[in-house]
Image 1: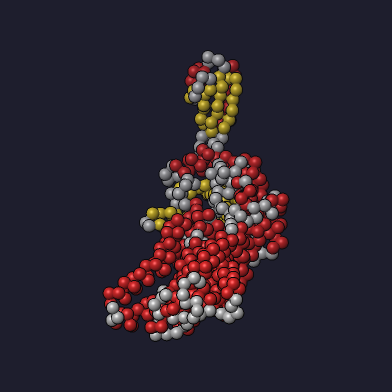
Image 2: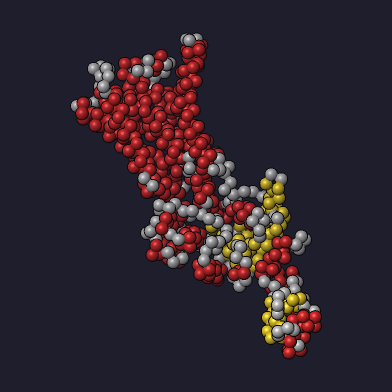
Length: 301
Length: 277
């Protein structure tokens, strides 16, 4: 089992000056998995990345990257890292920076050019980074990470500060890469857009891993109520709210909460009151709701 | 794990950045201007009738070099590690499969190239101009000696600058530390030794301890070597015949100065290995 995993984190704890940064974290990542790492600032995301990269050592537990200790030459050859807010030398061109990293990674110079083209920067390769937009800089960072065909990409907030269009591009890259067998572990704040872009969500809270699963699994685990929003016909809101057992949220709208699995029964009740209702909308708990549930509730794991 | 290709990649990258942000031009012009001014001033007073005009200029340049070469080296190096930490590029580099010592060696090579160009243009050109104007045909081996040892001196302070840069996480703190290193090694150190000499007035300190303490400082070792090698005595340099009273000739200061490169680099590498980006 373990051999199949690209990454195995086994009961890892890390303390900084007595403060717990990571607390008994277990996780494993298989080839081709797209895994999102969520958590508030200071929840331990970057600490986890630094441990996986071998920059710091765990106080307890162990980590294996393709079967090797973090920082081992084979581990470093298998993974690529893109830190948050990396600032490449402004006076160098995109191509020069790519050639530089290609040499550090023992990769052919030709691949540097291919990698630039892959992120759509072939036309800007001879321009200095100073002239690049935020999105172009981030794409350059990704191009750098793709050098040497790593098996695991560690991306720290890769889409933060990017406009929605460039974000979409990034997630499309992730799809392509994972289809080719590359695993991606990335931290993110962009919750709503992650829904169909990841195979798995990890949620860290105060150093502990409080959730690990697909969106559907986490949704079932959290067992958050489904919200049915009903719009009443004029002047009948109170009556409708009383008969449905819901709560008025403004002039005409009423929220009816029901547990997962009971929504059909509620919908039947709403349609029985056809004369009082002019519109209805069913809202399953969003990723933001689920995230909030796991990252706020103590003992939610 | 230390690969020549990695070292060369980092060296070329640093050199390219040095060219692009005008460091090469800036350092060359500064050295050239200072050296030309000094050559003009140094040639005026007496002493010229005893020795070769070029030799006098070289002695002046060696004195200037003690102050300015370490300063330029520290300016080039203080940001080398701390700056990369701040810009987030160090984690990227260290995530690549290369040895940490390759990073230090590569940066040294790249910065040394910048420094060497500045020294060769600044001092070399000045030396040539003086030689041509004075119609000298000899003394060029002294000029070569000055250029080489200035580069060695620069390498020592590059290594010290990397150590400072790796020791503190922030660029601004590293800059302060680099200035501190400069002040101590080229100003305060000599002042304290001078104070010791005055107080001691020819006692045990002056005769036995002082020469060794003087040579211990790489900047002073550099000056001792160049003065001893020029063999001028007090006349041309105005240094009150310091080197004539020292117990050794030119070789020991040179060996010591070269040894300082190894020391400074070992220090830089060992501090850098403890950096946790």
